Image 1 (cartoon, rainbow, N blue to C red):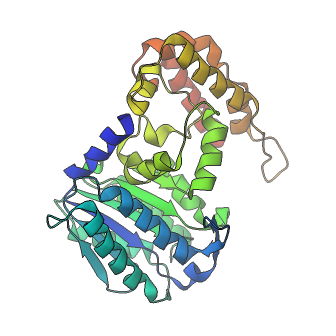
Image 2: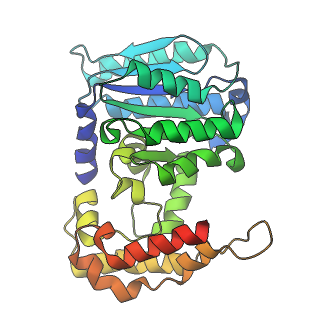
Length: 322
């Protein structure tokens, strides 16, 4: 119920805009697989994930959904029009499949497309989602331009940005994760297998991260920086946050179960090496931090960001990562 309440936030936006990378590189393989263990191309992954998100949206109040592309002028506009979820989905899937039937080709003008989107959407409330597989056209200059554009956008809470990563090459998509860390109301989400592994590493096995949980994060995490978007920050959720998120009133034993598994996951963390072969300071900090000493704060305080130990940890983490 807690996660379902998050989805209701989508009704507040004038439009949900999905921007799809249709560059030639999207024909390369990703690391996402189908239910039959077939490896998908990045193009196929974007198509499948978009349709899965629509499967959720069909049951949620929304004003309008638009699907557009980086290179081609096509724009698919989806509205409820009084239809029941099943009827809406039949039409939506058909139109999405038709749009993806044409194979991708061209470059990756992400910066230019986002500039266009924000210009056209001025004074509107738009949740934006970008399916993308790699470095934008213009390289580092474009990445810096995208960061400035998003950092300076008007009313970021009503214009959240979600990067939906479709790639098997981490270095080419790192810029999206970097932007997520510095820009408010911005999130990055990989395929389910990768995200589930990251959540297991950062939160431990007691947090029930299902595929449905992942889909909801894909849709609305950017608008929820205190919980959904903080799931991979290596900081435990407070009892209040966990209660609200899962719709369960955790007693002390149940919350202690979650907290202990979080700490266990941190202690089991593998410390990676930097380019000089030295242990990464950020990984060491996460592995060795003494969260148990602050357990009472997480029980009593509504949000983790209000806890001094968390504020100090994040500042140390920022310095270690820098």
